[in-house]
Image 1 (cartoon, one colour):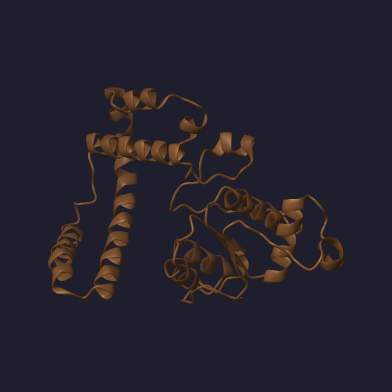
Image 2 (cartoon, one colour):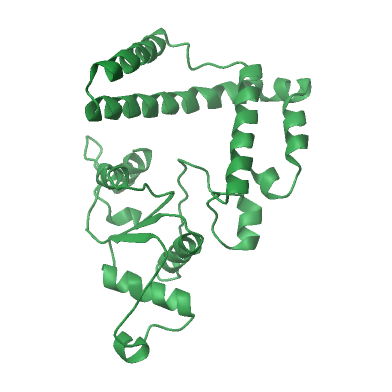
Length: 256
């Protein structure tokens, strides 16, 4: 993705992925990567099939989904279905690049909206987590909101889970981002009685949400978001276990 974002031709990347040297050098790393990637994909597929069964518990759905669920279960039990050879990884790599190219042509890539940063990072990966870390009061929330605004302005559905600021404050900042003006003491005095924001950016200011709470909201909206921002990680409700340190709880939340 970084090479692609840097402007390298997709044909060159695909050709490089087919070379014997690439396959030899990536053998160990690719297999370790595939083990985690396929396990995650399998879990997501099982979840999707379960949702399908819950929504359509008819004979046709049972006939099509149950065999696949059993196959997935048997594959997991065997313990070897999540190991892929370099050749198989190369095929997956080609498909990922083709999917990335299709998203680019369709205008579906999710980026930060800052050209220099996007050139360095490439598009934000689907299913990935990007953590913004810095000292207090240096602009983490404002930067994250700018990224969401940049994507919402391009028509991308975004969610903002603000556990520190109320929705009124978030939209006050959105007004500031869109107009380039400092938020005044009285918004009514500055902009009149109406404040409209046309981008598909939805805000939730419920405090102390856990990872499962956010996942439930993302899954059950008519149009799922492509970008979700949580502000901020330290204010989420974390799992509790034998280890009750804050670092352990945050780690478990990120995994979830």
